[in-house]
Image 1 (spheres, rainbow, N blue to C red):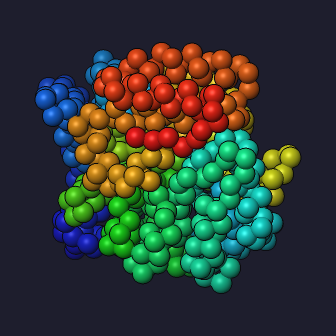
Image 2: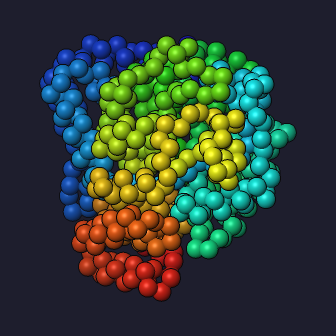
Length: 482
């Protein structure tokens, strides 16, 4: 039997089944232990000193106690703390991105994904480089600056060379004032050598969802194909970091397995990355299982309610305070709005989950990976965010200035977000307003910029940001960054 060891590089030791079971037992036994829960919440509170804002985060066991807690007044404290941590570390910025599906050819047999190789109904597509260029222009014309590319696992149709060529194409496309400044990559687990190639290609974050941390369930859900190998998949982030990628993104597909198990595994994985590499995940995503071409979510009996979903988000934010959190258009506008208050710091906008979907006038459904719940335009999402008091940010400065991995975490921990990310968000918002926004969104945006400039602590930074925004508005200048 494998023994629990966060510093091990073996999947069954750093995501240890027995440790998770013991954690869930401990959490269940202490879900009414008000004194313990209060102490955990106190530990998680951000502390401030001359060096900035600090938070130690929580262990998987402490975080699991919070998730199990069913004392209403303590749950309210929990939600308030999650909101405070989000504000203290990330401010009111919300980073915008869109997925770009390159190919839905796949050799895996995943039972929850319509791209599985046995699905003969779905229209199989793979974009040529010319088609990718058209998709990128369509995304640039909306105002996007950051993409997450997606492709099924297929060594013949989607080899690493195709992915690398596609990244190069995306970065080269310049249309009007548009440019994609950061390409994140969500592709199957691969080798250290291939991760080095992705690093050299200039990717931002490497994202790989675990789907489920429960090994037995994992192997049943992935009956065939290379993804069936639980250890190879689970150890992918260690290989990515060995290959030089220091921004990695975790996530599970909630609804496949019992959510408390998944939550404990997810926090454990974050702890492992911190223990081994000195830096935790750059992002954590929280997708829920949704209907797709030949996938009926009701066949999976571990679905979670909106209330539990929001509590999971709050507990992740408290446990891993420095990590960005992502929610996609899988969720409705209502759920996304509520999640923003509990710790989410990145959202997608105007997403199409089909291959070649952005160049189609009507949203195509014949090659979608999942149903999109929030179908608003990017302009509508940007306006909605501002009406709720959030700054839509198209910033990619940290990645382009080399502030990744532990360097970004240092920026976050020392409280310099307001002197760096905050003005960058305002400047990229001004770009969006000038180039892509409707009149109503433009009016909202400049009112917000005027107000938020006053929240930049350093006077010199504030004056430079104001000058740069004037240059964006009056001289058609672009791409300023701190």
